[in-house]
Length: 423
Image (cartoon, rainbow, N blue to C red):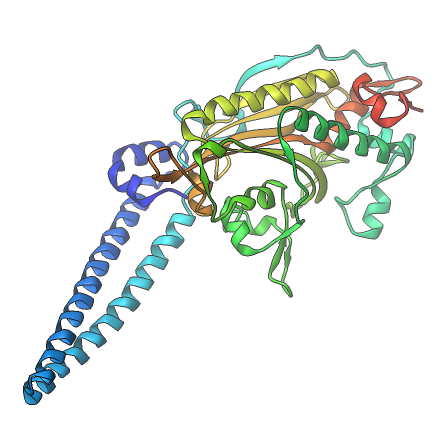
């Protein structure tokens, strides 16, 4: 969430940067400033009324002490009027503050200067590419056919148990899934990320804290009886560990990693781009996140990008990195790099990770601050990355490592799987 003080002091810059993302930026910012001015005026009036009431109460007390009862009783009517005024001003202040807060919740983060202008994923900027596209045999198949052929993922059984988008992993498919989770976690902890296990459901405050609510409310599974949400990503519960926390500067950075299942309600669509593991309602993901000093956060973002690159290069999967344009940028992000693995059998790129710097956007919602060496508190920067999302990594392995006689297992995973091929 943007800070009102920053908007007030940097109105022109905020409008210019926000205009890269939304069309009505100027109108929205003018509305914010109008509500903020009304709120501050009402607060001043309320403070004045409270001060006048306090002064008047003391004066009445002195009059009673000195025996001037008639004069004191006349002034008591003024206190009644001031009390009524205070109540009315308090109600106005609450209404204005709530309207301002709700408006701020609707405004996306300001894009970093490095974010390219654009309207859709077609305008994203490729900044890095690694690996050669494998030459597959003539009978190569997409992963959903391989899953059926080797009986390692059962999409129809998942559909029977729950519905579309909830696959059942079986045998070596389940073991490969577990191997990837353990491998990712081991890589992350070796890089200094502290592993945590977090709840898979969160309350509304947590959803607002990381910006999923109200922006992604329609994509989250809601448990009405308990007023809880199934998590769309481990970022939500893990980042909320730091909600309402004031850290010392010496405690920064904070680095966490977590494995969770993720749940997302996706709009129904059809075709090869959503077949098999390409788009699921439940999937597994390993996350990394950091809480950083603002002056270090972009160095930290670069380090997270290098960390994910190292994992993909150990897996020997061809991939590319895209810098997301303003039109494709996530609601909470200031700058995002997407990683995509090339699916040779599908002849297309599959997104498998997003690494983002949210700057103070989440921290402002979370009230996540740190005290600097002068003892002053300021908002921290938060960052998050998939390290990695499993379904499309698994799809890339199945498709790119297939041979006429079976599916080879990447060498780096063999100590985790206990087998070197699926046949």
